[in-house]
Image (cartoon, rainbow, N blue to C red; front, side, top):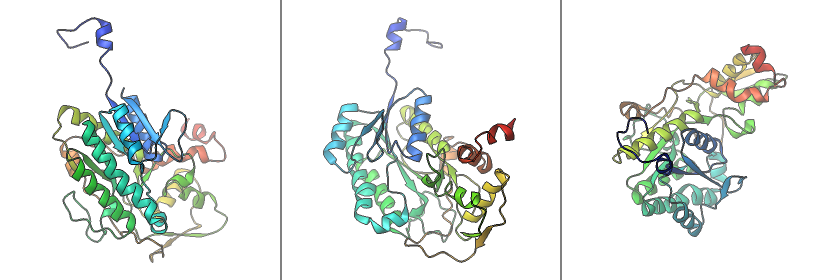
Length: 325
């Protein structure tokens, strides 16, 4: 191998196994991005899913403790990235027991089993652990979730660090990315409002969001995992977020501008919409801990990232070629 003064034959070198990562929720928006990121970096990737299990993914019910134990004992991954969650706040309010089973109890089981097999566990959490009244929030600021979803993610954090003290909790804001349908992310779902320009529609212009590309989060997960292999003292809570502050209304206008579409039918709503789950007004994350350790990435600009994600949903798929060439 280049740079080494000693070494065996090429066959011996080829036998050095690639590090392995187990990704839960691998069929979801973030899980797919995480699998691709690690695969591209030469890791052996084991992806699990349940309802949306598909070829090359292992079907595993994370709420089944025996199944989780068997999974980790069989594969003995070096790293576990736990992306699986019920992440829709209004769904959590309506189906609380099922959501808590996945967001808290399954996380607890995974943390115990990761500790037992010596895997580095990376738990994906949320900016919704904060109430949004006093941003920006550092990792050591006191959480105060406003809804059951935020409480369930906070409980998941506590279970992670209680059972697996060497784990990392990575809090992230609202995500978007390469979606299979625009409804898969609260950000890309705005495409429907933008594209249906025949009638006016109101969009929230109160709640400040920091839409973040799942590909950037995946890169941070890989960097944290690689650093842990060199320095196992990497542990505890980290924040990662894009920097552009936007309401849903501002996101929709940006999407319209990016695709040269009209936005005059979009109307800003400056009073909070009634929803079954309360949302924080501004849960901006301070990401300096990650940055100081040189483990962050420069977030993709919203406009170019959203074009990447939404151009397949334009009526004329040649749009991209006509705009960029």
